[in-house]
Image (cartoon, rainbow, N blue to C red; front, side, top):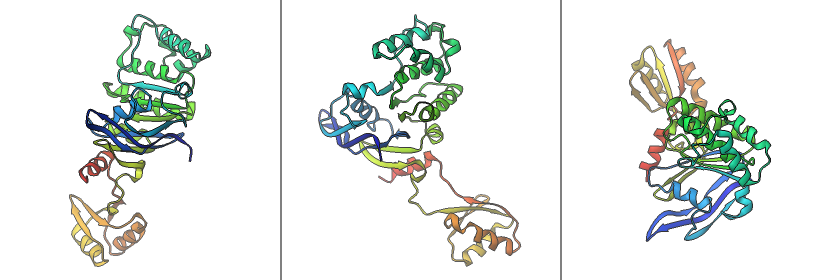
Amino acid sequence: MNLAIRSEGLTRRFGKVPVVDGLDLRVQEGSITAFLGPNGAGKTTTIRLLLGLLKPNSGTCEVLGLKPGHPEALRQLGAMVESPSLYDHLTGTENVEITRLMRGAPRSETSRVLQVVGLTDDARRIVLKYSLGMRQRLALALALIGNPRLLIMDEPTNGLDPSGIQEMRELIRHVPETTGATVFLSSHMLSEVEQMASQVVVIHKGHLRYQGPLEELGSQGAPLLQVRVGDPEKAAALLRAQGLDVVEQGPYLLAQAPESKAPDLAACLVGAGLPLFELMPRRKNLETRFLELLEAE
């Protein structure tokens, strides 16, 4: 497995307080990995360590196989951290050109990145007249100059309205397939993360709490099948007679059984003459699983 980010025991203290404490990160190349945690969990400090803006007190860290801050690592890395720093009195094209020249990228990069973020038609407008969503897209264009292998983003949808959030979400979702870059992003908008990321890293109070596929976060609980039938009381008695734990929740029955048992349950209920309206796995959303993980500590 090729890793875009790897750390071992990464620790950073401010005074005597550990903000990042023994963090072991594994971020797969080609993935969109969400970096989650409550406020004060150590997300921004970790990102600054990855970018070489801070030095760790102990532990090691590699970005694209190199130490953070190494010139070759910086050449292959794009970053969008906090509020974008833009020249308001210049056009979108001129902002991109300045960064392109500083990075030594070919002239064709300017039109390419503006096209990727959908700003070609507004490239000649001064940035002062850009909406917040357009400013965020321009910041993403700056981060994509040089076609980086790794894109690190800190709260990329922060402050955007619903339309801007949707635009940024769609842009980020397509970055790996359009540019080949790995995306590592922090966010507190869990509903958006759920629609973008394939991998998740959760930290709390500087400690790693979970790392792995999004769909497996919180999957350690018992599997449940959600059932809606015409006669819930009779159905519950029938399922309990089959040795299943059943809980009534509003119009639904929750039967403790894996998804593979769904055909058997359906046959049992229909065979007993009960009208079956719905039978599906009960899936918790990311917010619920995230909060349960933190509460378990």
